[in-house]
Length: 279
Image 1 (cartoon, rainbow, N blue to C red):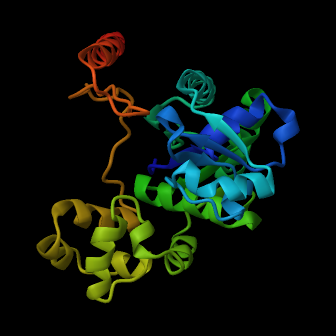
Image 2 (spheres, rainbow, N blue to C red):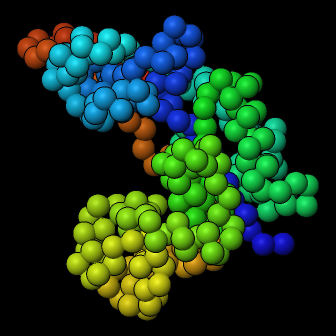
Image 3 (cartoon, rainbow, N blue to C red):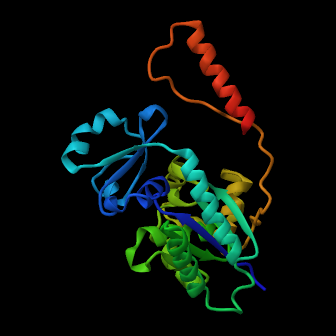
């Protein structure tokens, strides 16, 4: 049986978690701030529509906050971790294999579900279950490789007509979508590699998929060559159910004001060391 992956991605996760417990904010713009309330790290769809940028310092958007009654939240990572666990537990109850990719994303193995029901319907069931049981909106992308599943999820978020679920197992649909997607939007490419590819005339995902593998490997790396193969429906990246051991644990926070005494610095270092030890 051929490989089929799904990528489930929570929409505007931190903002959605905050809205979940505030029904009065259902249609209001919401932003979540970084440690010490410095910069915007999450935005609801309403805040995005107002042009609020990711990472912008909050003091620069005070006028917009007042004018549009934007609700501002300090980050609550304990809440987000708890909601993430609920989402992942629900996914694990619905499919045999789950790779938790990040706090708000997971890859699923749907290879053995095709005999149960159509993949589109299975994706819709997943979206409905997370929304109904947890209250968090998600998008689902389904495809024969993880890179294409990422691309399908991109389409599910970008195009409202999809209603949040895209089945990209058809080669014809894959090519039609790749023709519309800029190369830098491909998983693992990004802006830096995208600029180099643009200089070679490779501007869309389809251009990259049609590029000679040997040339791509020579000009870039085996990793980008693997991306080309994945875009052509060949599964090169396996599902990792057991997360790799952490190579480092980081516990950091910016100071809200200049630290000038030893005791202040000592207190901060001790607190961070305790939290790192807990992790």
